[in-house]
Length: 187
Image (cartoon, rainbow, N blue to C red; front, side, top):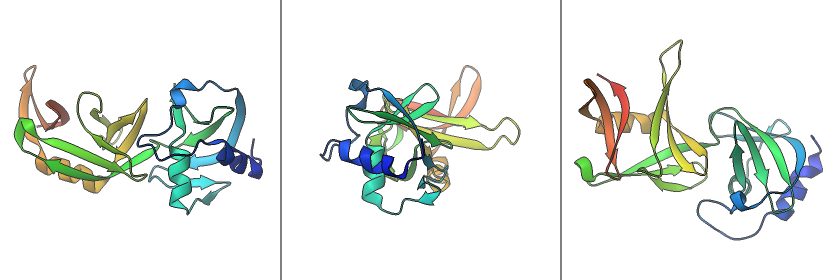
């Protein structure tokens, strides 16, 4: 469905409130109403009908009702579910704040839609390697099957914080957060 009025209808159904981390979309099971022409680019830019959505409050509102089921992304309200396209990850981690040092270190990631997550057991960091170029793509888990691509500048900060650790006979560079060691590459 590419109906221009569809996004406006969806906005009217989104419950109001400023909840960190989004609405309880995991509790809602409305009928699927088709796809809308909405896309999130790899850099975190949201598009509707091919045009960037320039209003950050609107992007934040839409992001608060996003859900991923398998490989598909949806915007979900209590009464309808519509499909959207996501090029890579729906969010981008644009800042990291570091508290503490060593194994006591805490990494707080802030996304482009102002979600904040401390990396740890519930919010893991992973690095995927492109099979052809071996270029790393780092991610942090944000919420319920949704991840943020870690921006290149933020990844460089993680590399600067990285320490070596031997795991199963392999020396890894990684970062500590929330008592967890997250591998970012081998030495």
